[in-house]
Length: 207
Image (cartoon, rainbow, N blue to C red; front, side):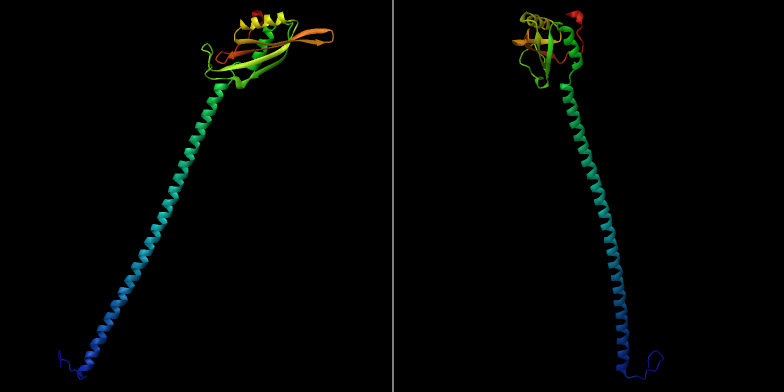
């Protein structure tokens, strides 16, 4: 008898009952631990998935930032290239329009001379010209035409040498040219123009 109760079962049956109770408690504890482990694993997986999502989002944002920086660098390079091209164009731009040059030639050349050809050598624009009296940027031109005689050609050369903007005026070739009964002198001469000179037109009164 224990605690006022009469236990008629043999002692071994009581021990088995107590063992089953202990086993049941162990099983329940194991199930509880397993459930807790499952919850922890699920939580860890969910946290990992959220972290991976945030990492992917951060990587995408970083790629966008890098792409924007690359685009900015490319645009800066293109702007710099455009600036250099514009600067180069300004260096070789003609301050004396070709039309004004033709008008000037027409006003300076005597009526007895017929101009046949005018060549403007853009490749002749040089920098660091070796003569100290010259400037860095110059235009080189060459004309050909017909004159009544060599004396007229010489006077034209002297006239151009005394007119601005013509510089470095030099006589080229002269040769007799026959067209039936008409005999004329075919000639060529060259000159340079200071590219820093403002545009202007020499009028006929300055002949």
